[in-house]
Structures are given as structure tokens and as C-alpha cells.
Length: 450
Ligand code: SAH
Image (cartoon, rainbow, N blue to C red):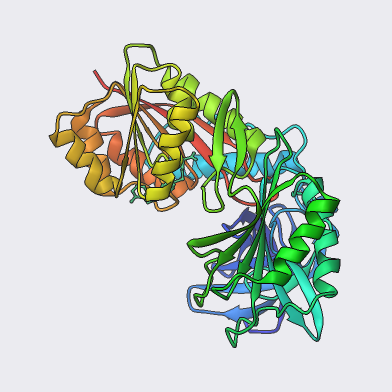
């Protein structure tokens, strides 16, 4: 019987969703923070439940071959989870995660391709979200410690764009020298909650967003924005976003343009996209192109093909497909994303597109009833996967091919199992959009069974 606060020897055999090492002691599963597969550890048990226990590393008895010394010096930051695993091993672990889901959850006997990783897995993010807090009278600007809302001060984050790091460093000085009231989460008081940045890797144009717990325009933020624009002319847009809600949501729905434009332009391959403060765009532009090109290759579209893109966001994949297809219909929940998608279609002169806002589980069955059909369906759902009505309608529509893009292997495998009633899973290709985290994107090709 395990006891809390005592140390035990454990062999780590797997990696959990949150990057914790997993092993067993007396048949009880133990999640060890800081442990990685292959480690032999002495672990101190800090939480003991009937079904599982949680431990921390007391000492490393034998280090895993997968270990590396993190390049990032901020050991308390929870932004990344696998800084202590070498990049090749991260990719192998992601492949294994997808394989395990395919067999265990999907019941599928399918080969999973090697993960398409980055050549240089650094400075890959085009969006950053920094919480701002006061800790013991000192400004903290950085990222949350894992599983907490304690803000770890970060001056130079290796997964952010170098220009964003420079801007944040300067912004920190301006904030320290100003009288702006910093948000206190427990009391839900104060003004400045978060700093969000978005950058186009193509043009290096930056949008700087101050998230405030206040409905009125805050002049001091405009002043700070002005100083930053003078120092960094790449900042083309300074926005105040209003978020007076309690809880974890970073941004609210209302924006005030303090300086410059209300949007910046970004590019994926030869297509341009208008990015507003709330637009969803994949955060790793280099790997997004790899992912979309793979999706396009698997869709193997020709000029006769009717395509439906479900969960289309601002129409990024839709427009990629529209360049090759006869027609693309995109469906997405968020109204403003659909407005963006329509604008993006016009800007890119792709008039063979039609977009619908609404829940896919309502809109897709409705379109089917109205006679809409597809040769190829592309789906890219959120982490919870596709709703049953969406899967049922896809099966009823029975397009020749389905390309499923997923950000969560377990729900992907669950949905593939349902679709395999009529489809053969021909290819499974994981792509690494999030180095140093446990997240993995996967794109799959499904072919209608004859
Ligand atoms: N394909 C896009 C976006 C994928 S993210 C891209 O690559 O950029 C998933 C999208 O699904 C988000 O834009 C989200 O708003 C949308 N979404 C979430 N639930 C939905 C639902 N029930 N119906 C339709 N869209 C939904």
C-alpha cells in the first residue's frame, strides 16, 4: 500500500496528456511530474487516490535516453511541457500516441506515418497571450505556471517570434513606469489583464492587444502603444479588447482600435487573410503550410469536384481547396469568422465558394436535405471531435473521399471508428504544430468502400 509523502522507485513507461511521466507501483498508475519515458526514478507521492497517484521527482536513478537539458531557462513556466525531451523523441512519442489511439480507441489496423516535424523547432508561434499580474508589489508578465494561475515572469520565450520578445521587453518597462492598474484575478479588480500579440511571419506586421477589465478607452494604454509604435514601426495595430468576465477566457468580444489598423494581413502560401483580434488562425504558420499541403494532397481534388469544408474557421483550408476545386462550401459556428471567410474569398478572387454560419450538427444535415452533395468532405473539428449528426450526415452523403484534420488523436480515433462503417482509412499523417507540448495534429484520408 502506497503512502503519501514517501518515496518509491518507479520506471516511467509512458507520457500523459499534460506531459507527465506515467508508471506503475503495485499496479497503481502513478503520474510523475517531470518524469519522462525511460526514466528510473525515486518519486515522492504527493497525492493518493483510489484509482491513481501523483508524484514528483525526488531523484533520477537512471536517466532516460530521451532526456535533454532544456534550452529554455524558465523551469517553472507551464507554457511548454516537454522541454526536457529531445525533439526527435518528442516526434516519436507523438507518433506512438496516435498509433495507440488508432488501435485502442479506433480498433483500426492502420499504419501511422512518421510525424512531420520542424527543421528548427523554435520561434514558431504567431500568437502569444501573456497574463499580467502584480506579485508582492512587482509586475509579473509571462505565462502561467503549470496547472496554476501564478504568472511566471518571462523576458525571452524561445517559442515566440524574436520581434515579439523584444516588444514585450520594452512593454514591460513602460508598464512598470506607468500608473496603470494591473488586474487582480481573485478580487476581479484592476484594469490590465492580458497582453496578446499577433504577428505575420511574412510581413512581420504586428497587432498588439491590451485586454482590459474595463469598458472605457484607457488613455495610458494608448500612450504606451504610441511609444511602442515609435520604437517598433512593425506594430501596425494597437487594440484594446474588453473582457470584464470572471474566469479563464482571455479575450472578450468587444474591441477598440487605439492606434493604426483594426486588422493585419497574413499569408498562407499564396493566399492572403485578414486577421482581426479574435480570428482563429493556426499558431504555427510554418507547419500550417505543411499540414494544409498534406490535406490538399490527400484530398486530391480536380476541377470537377464539389467540396464541403466543415469547421472552416476564417476559410483558410476552404480557400486552399477552392483554388483546385469546382466549388467549396464552408461551414463554421462563429459568425464573424464566416464574415472573414467571405471577405477572404473576395480578396483572393475565389468566387467558387459559399459559406454558412451555424452549428455544423444543424447546418450540415440541413444542407443535405436541401440537396447539397460533395465529392470530397474536409472536416477540422475542435478537440471534442465531430458531433454524431455530422458523422451520420457524412455517411449518408457518402462522398468519395473524406479528409479528417484533427487536433486530438483520441476523438479522431473515435470518429474514424464510426466512419469506417463505409470508409477505409488509407493514410494517417501526424504533423507537429506544437513543439515542446504534447499536442499533435493529424490529417487522415478516408476512401469510400466499394
Ligand atoms: N479549419 C480551420 C479552423 C479549425 S478549428 C483552420 O484550419 O483554421 C475548429 C473550428 O470549429 C473553429 O473555428 C470553431 O469555431 C469551429 N466550431 C466549433 N464548434 C463548432 C460547431 N459545433 N459547428 C461548427 N463549427 C464549430
